[in-house]
Image (cartoon, rainbow, N blue to C red):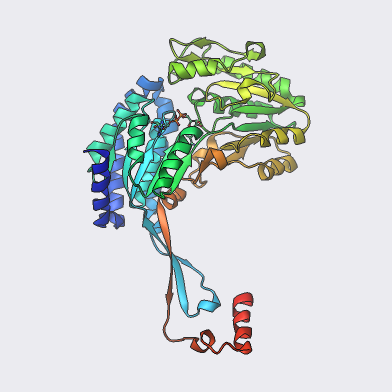
Length: 458
Ligand code: NAD
């Protein structure tokens, strides 16, 4: 079937109304869960082939999130699908009002390669839960995981309901020529812009989960021992190829040396120095290895800096004495390099961060409430946390998404269901009372007085 035929068939299926039944949706989500369990080995093997990602990392940072979303959604979808009562103002008396979720229709989900499973399958759970049909295209940059997901999805679902296709930018362009009712894209800001333009041609709403340079402030009163652990872990997870990773540190000069030492000792103890291993992932391809290598200024290496292009390995690397003028501060790193920028004046540090496009995440390490509140309220970012990094992503009660060039819209938990739904606002009015005399001519001053009271005060 061509893409055009697939979309036409899915639209026809959607219009039969079958996906509006919550029982149908729950049954499909349970099927999805069984397919994941049955295909776990295939998924583990594929991601190891593409990214050398271990079973441990694959379960903790990919499959477990999809399983959680499935369980949470199966348990809650009935509640989310019910009418949501809202108040009615006196002007509309006698009436009751509510919001009613309806599926958007035919959706398109384009995944990214860095966490190929969760970034493709989690939005798919949300889309199907909301009662849509879906066309899915995993990223071709991780080809084995793409093939594994396409196989699993197409063996599980009928194509008129949910269909996965493989392909790169040409296939993506062909898909984007079709009219969808919602597009969910995860990837870089540049491609996000292309997707947004294509969607505009059909007036299709979008969710864009994009990237950016995520700062982490380290305040003078931070607990170095614990914070160093959390920063190192968050940076080196997935070898730095994480959209919510700490991109760079802004460290108060009074704690800089202590933090640097602590991070180096943790890396020396727990991470490999010379090659990809079961415990440390590869960089996705040679192009990205070269890109990351070019961001390393040898004069600024504090620790690490080993690159092995053949084996797609970049060692955990800390760069110190970095300034906002350095090359590494000009683009999102998306690799295991951690630039440390020293600051003395928080005002100046904030002013520098404001010059960048709005990041996806922002982190604050330290307990000073005044400074923490100031950073969280004064800077604009998608989401973040105090005294930890990355983990807020795994709290399904917190909607996840960016702002400005780091994204549009959000998902995870009930926010995912909302993203893939349209909420109809409905008012049902009683017939036993009618203020006909107030609505109709002649328009007298006393009538206006009553209306003013009703509209302005009550
Ligand atoms: P990318 O933007 O290059 O590619 C992602 C997808 O876009 C692929 O499936 C690809 O087939 C498709 N694509 C490529 N060219 C296209 C075109 N011309 N038209 C339509 N589609 C096209 O992704 P990348 O740069 O390799 O991924 C890294 C970026 O993604 C980083 O910036 C990272 O921060 C971001 N990211 C964000 C999130 C998030 O949840 N916010 C998650 C992961 C990655």
